Length: 562
Image (cartoon, rainbow, N blue to C red; front, side, top):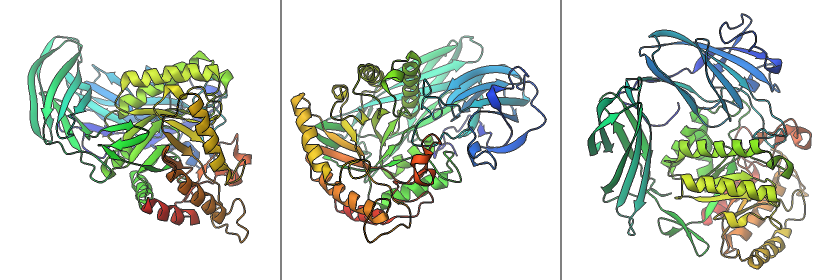
């Protein structure tokens, strides 16, 4: 399942989920041999979507693999959408190269026109190789580099005129009871011939706009100043959602939005003019049996466990999560921080123009995909890069400008690991810090003195008016390890650290929220595996199979009272 609601009533769409031909191969072999025209005979089969590292014999495989699938269509025009392929992807249809894409967690698509009805074969070369020079993420990260077609491949059958995409902007009146909407709708025609059509727009099945339009190849239609009265707001208690459907004579597209206002005033976070404190966890899409190719049932279970914990917020660490997961957060009223997978980049790598280019493209694709989700209140630029350097400042400035040019309705931040010498805090709306006192360094009690010193530094720089989020903190605990001495790696030490820090942060008027590191134990990259017990980051409140540790119940008591 790609989305949790029906996006098309007229357009036929289906997925290629199921068994695909599959072959791993070292060093990108297969191009000279033209496997995209004639797939090799010695193939196996894997299920798509999935991670190949969950297949027997491929637990640590990182490299190149080829996929092939035959399917049938009933139209001459189709859109092929890949919702997630790890790393590099080269795509071929019937032996013809459609194009390439880089980046693992956002969709890319190809419009193919004038093909024959009937059977066609798609071939994909996937390369999830990472390095510490120019890939995003780098090799050295604290999660696992899963490989594969990790999300669904979707086929849309198109008429001669179709709706390519849409964007819905809105502003709420001061009383938050009425909204003014502006929309952009991009229409395309298959052959470039001038065509006439009728565009209709519905909100919750009530028509609000109708006009005759002309399309030549590609046309963008702007619709302005549509009024909607008696608006039902989206919030954490009552997450009301509106369905906006765009329709032509032969095609349609539905988006889902929620009306809400997020803002910061006097270092306080407000949702619909009500003060809100972020009680969150960091969550990786990771499971021993599924990797990052999550089934929807497991997404629901994660959200149920997180809501039961008393959380109202999740940080998607450290990459765009699946669309279905965001849909479910929209429905459940959870607040989301979404970011791209730039983790731990040193100054030398940040100077590489390719890194900047790739990062900007990932931000663009993330915002284009997820702009309409009301759950998203924060765009994250990156995580723990060298923001204490000139190179870090330059790339953060470019990223912040890119995000604001695409969306000025949300807050932006990044998680800093250099709080006492960071030079980028002026560029964002919220100052977010990752620190691990009581685990990697210092004592649990070190937190109070650090916060005092940190806020003194901010005041000295004229930044005392910016609110603070503690975006990462925590301690590892091996599931089932409980000791009288309350030593590190035990569940009771993790519980002690979180009890102390959660109360400290909540009582600090300059802190608007915190995100515990982390929700569940996750497998980590082989480059850092020897520094992690079991090859896992074990700081989860639940283990990798979602069994609760002692700290889960203590955090629940604290969050329910706050």
